[in-house]
Amino acid sequence: MAKKRTEFEKRLAPYYDELKWLYYELYHDDYAAFDYFIEMLRRMEAQRSDTLKAWDKKRMRRGDWYKDNKRLGMLLYADNFATDLTGVRKHLDYIKSTGVNYLHLMPLLESPEGRSDGGYAVSDFRKVDPRIGTMEQLAALSGECHDADISVCLDFVMNHTSEDHEWARRAREGDRSYQERYFFFDDWSIPNEFEKYVPQVFPQTAPGNFTWCDEAKKVVMTTFYPYQWDLNYRNPVVFNDMTENMLYLCNQGVDIIRLDATPYIWKTPGTNCRNLPEVHTLVRMMQIASMIVCPGTLLLGEVVMEPKEVVPYFGTVEKPECNLLYNVTTMASLWHTVATHDTRLLQDQLHKTFSLPREYVFLNYLRCHDDIGWGLDYNYLKAFGVDEVAHKKYLNDYFRGYVYGSDSRGELYNDDPRLGDARLCGTTASLCGIEAAEYERDEDKKKAGITLDIMLHAFVFSLSGIPVLYSGDEIGQLNDYTYHDDPLRREDSRYLHRGHFNWKDEKKKSKKGTREHEIYTAIKKLTKLRASSKAFCSQADTWLIPTGNDCVVMMGRYYKDEKVLCVFNFSRDTQWIHTDADEDFRDMWTGEAARADDFGIEPYSFKWLVIKY
Ligand code: GLC
Image (cartoon, rainbow, N blue to C red; front, side, top):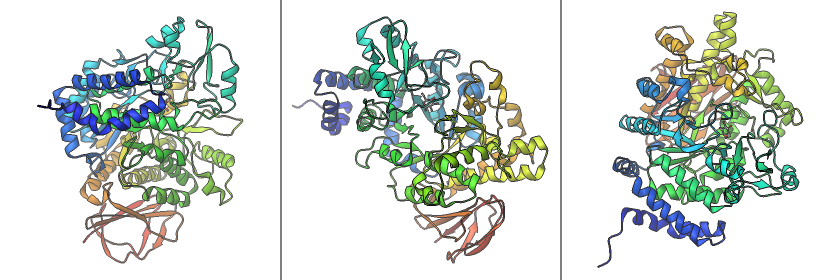
């Protein structure tokens, strides 16, 4: 009698041929490495706890759980939010009460102080930074989150390790097999060749893509900071061991793996070393690995790239790569719209995302821990005579409050004077002008800033996918300038919006009239309203509604007999709108009857109009 197939074998079977094909193609038929990979998957599956296996089953039964209209994400640094993991656990009630059911814990694995890039230089993929907690505490927190139906997202920093990682240490000591896990060169000739084509990520704070390693007497590739050594995925050992590290984290209860700096993981001389086809093969293999070992897990790609490079990371509907991607182009286009009061670029961007398959789920957001890069569709803008460099300068001026009428308070990030390519930092509230208004004690300005802040959140909540809040934004937290005085941080303006969560201000959320109250209650209301209409789910039809007014965006959403129209006014004046939406709606915000064919919309405000058939 044939032996009964194990759960692992059943899950491996449908993917085996594809996996083998991809692996052999990338690693030149290295069957020993492939066999090791499969055995590693088997081992990791065996190590997965019964509780997590039950969780996987639950997730698989409702494979589309993350496509509904009930998700709300939040990303936070455990230490900024509540000192450590014990603190996060203590404050889980706050997270829950905000309506959050997807919690992205920013990098918390061991990372050397002062050379950590905010935790993105990992020295041990299996150890939580002792200042933040332990792996046991992380697993316990995930368990508690699961009990409350909260998914946990964690970064998997796969492009590089810290120079203090065990592999890097051995490489530095001259062990060739460990040097082969990185990109080591005897002299600068090949690195100089690379430099001709590879752009710089941190032109100001970490120029160049290579660093001299004095101990090894060699040059090592360091795309990001000099202490972040790029891993060489041409070496199958790196891929095998890193995938194992990823699965190890999944086995601690992490549900969503954020693949940090995804586009960078494959390097070929003579190219820009971004988005190479091999990257897609690697990500697809990691997706397969997770579907076999921990099928309840999702992969979130961090693809902060020009618009045309982003969507391919979803893979195809039949052969997905990432389950989730950041809607980075919409985010940048949204801020562009704030600064120009002209919605045409944003509408074009929406039009493009509306035509994508519904299986592709975006994370929609206003701010995250990183800067805002002005990765807009300049081809589109060119048609209006917009010059890329001049426009970036305008946006950066606008968001620093240098343009007449702007009360934004941002700071530049990595200004590259050669390319005129600076990016921008600041919290949502400060970029919306609330900080300046409070400083000037100008109540009208403050009201306008709060209205804009809420409108932008409403916009993000109107899109298909998962809206994600940046911790602190829910109470309108302002910029934190203390990093200027910290020698370890002052070079990196991203710390402007990485301040400690202000628990004193959080208390003010129950006091009417405060920004904390206004924004917090509005976000809660948006979450509730969004969850109340299935037209907000990712499977809904979405379309743009012409209004004949460039200051306004109007979109429709329809799903199973429910239609919602979402309207946003990006100008400082009331706008009048005429459409042919000739039906009787209900204004979701006020609960009153409303018309959508002929109406006015106040400065910086929005409307959600619903109709059930
Ligand atoms: C990602 C992170 C960023 C970090 C970089 C290097 O882009 O979001 O914060 O600096 O990767 O790891």
